[in-house]
Image (cartoon, rainbow, N blue to C red; front, side):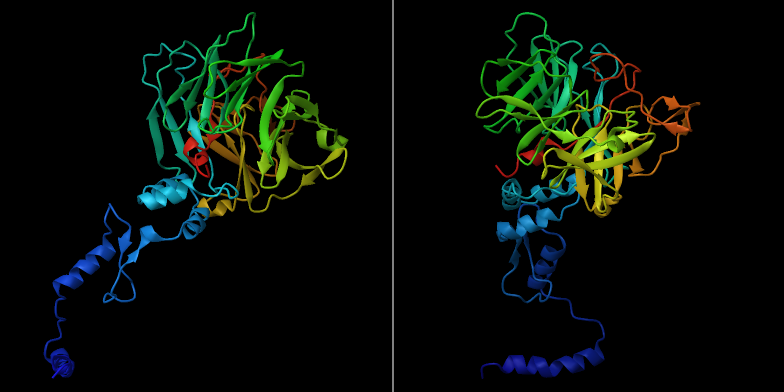
Length: 436
């Protein structure tokens, strides 16, 4: 008699469908499966099969192989997506932090509008830091600015999500995302050392992390976790910008000369021989940027209101500059303060961006945090607040073009001399914590 109830149920189904159009409510077991599929538990990564509710075992998302999860991570297109992924469950968070270092996140940086308490510590207003994601510009993350332990600290740069400040013998690292701070040991040097630029060579929690600071006559080096600094003589020109490219450190000075900086086995700084063609440097009205874009080191120049891009070709000696007519599916990100980091992003259309465009962080109090310019296309001036300006720049009356104004003085404070807030691009330190 085995199987008889099943055969009776099979014969009864057509009659039931004809006499009672309303479907029979599923049993309690089926209800639980549907609820699990539509509203997954906040504590686990379980769900049921979408092809058959009668499947004997659910898909356990937390048991997915790390290799598959890493492929998913590579397709995420914004910082908010990364946060959502890492917060799904413990195994996904582990996969996020084990993301192979040979891969890179393909997400746009966040636009940081910092507070002013480091320059004006006695303001009566409550200062905040605002982080805006280009993939969702209508919303932004607002964080309370950390208390300034020293008065009127000087901005030196930003590395691996850490803003670098100094005053006299003090140096402070501030996390742009969490607001947490790290203090280095005090300087123990005599004499006057006006520090103007600083950079981390690795994330602060890495055993390789070092903080480098420069004055006109010295370079200061601090190994993270130690209690002392080392000092090295420096007789080069003023450094404008420092970048890391293919495991090496490069910087460009105020005379637009490229240098290679090595810390091991011994500290060395050497100028890179570059054939600067006349067509490439003629008419420069603004100091150029260095931008790392995949396997290319780019020089971005702003001339007569037009952004031009060149690639360093190191396959020949001397190295030469090759003009890049079209960035295609890449976008670049720059700030007017050269000490702030530059970025590149592939396939910007995934988050609503545009290829072959340069995103410029504003240095004015404009309601817009950034603006864009297409490579090779002249940008006309606009009229704002009753005067002709673009990003708060001074207007060049020759030919109705705009050209950013180079602020005078040896040191640019975190707020420039026209009292306009500096904005910059930043990737939170959380991103640099992976692959360790």
